[in-house]
Image 1 (spheres, rainbow, N blue to C red):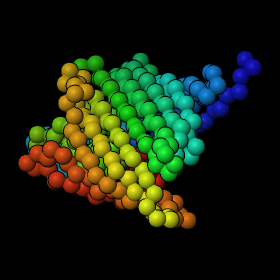
Image 2: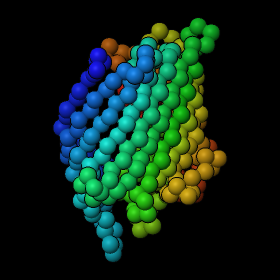
Image 3: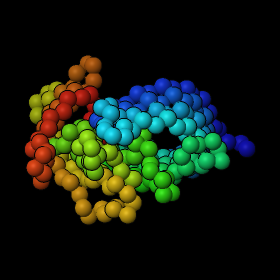
Length: 266
């Protein structure tokens, strides 16, 4: 149809520890991307996978251990004007996805899932950069229990600093570990500034939450964190160190957390 298009066929295996749960997934996917108007890309993706969700430490009396097949169709809309994917100084990224996994395509569990993200980078008075990120995730299994691998988690070095990885949201009754939810909101604000030569600093404020079900979704009920970070430009890439404070810690929660990684938080 006189349109340039990219096809991508891939196979993969992944294993991810979500604190209380471990997810092993093996699958294949087919993706086609088309530029609909200048700067905006629309993709459709079909993914067929075999998923094994189980508890890291089996809980008594009914340990969670489920194997399922996911046959998922997705639409993705994206626009990327960032000047650098790993350390952007200006531009923005918009990404919106909608996925549907119906039983008539062979899925063990029928669900719908959406995830939207918008990040913006703006130079302010020379070397100062204001970076902001907004993320929204919603999912439903139409009355059934959504598998942990399809739930949303938040907390950690790339979402809400001041909390341990995936530590925000509802906790499992038996283990006390995060169990994820059907909805999430994450908001990040960063001011990035130079210090000396290869050293840069950031001041950040993060807010967000994870909601057990869509009925619990309330974007005004948020957990918050704030702190400072150090960025070091090296030949191997940008080294990141962030120290975050939990602004309203609960009795059992640590009051702070520190993270080491490569690249910017978002």
